[in-house]
Image (cartoon, rainbow, N blue to C red):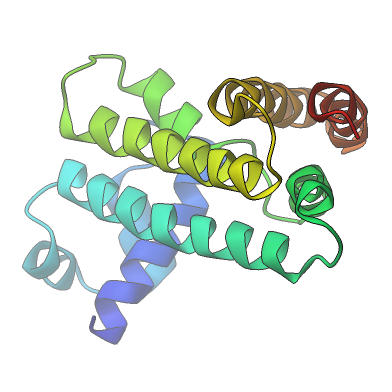
Length: 183
């Protein structure tokens, strides 16, 4: 990926995360990224194409970050499974935490069968599969069902952290997760 394209994607990601997709116009992205309008349109046919590129980029970047942080945790597979909430807490405390990027995109683009919604659904599906994989490694009976419960806890913690502006929900979710996984 060219430096200019990467710069556009990262600038747009930060602006969309903080202000929303509809609230941020192309002119703002151009101004903040320092690239010419022609450069933007050489890389992206439309704002929707830019949004899709940002979502696809962030999907991979965030999942890699999340998995890497969980995998760094030591201990038993069950402890690693519970560490998803420690990683979430660290994420909630980052300066650029504005809630779930994909929930934000889904709320601004409510039509179900669109490329934007497809990227959002795929992100959630892959995160759920990763949590299920951790449950299988922890030899949890009904790993799929337990993972579904943990995903709901994580999603709730993300929402509460966004609304309340603090990370306490991650600790609460971890306590509930301990009961679910029998830790």
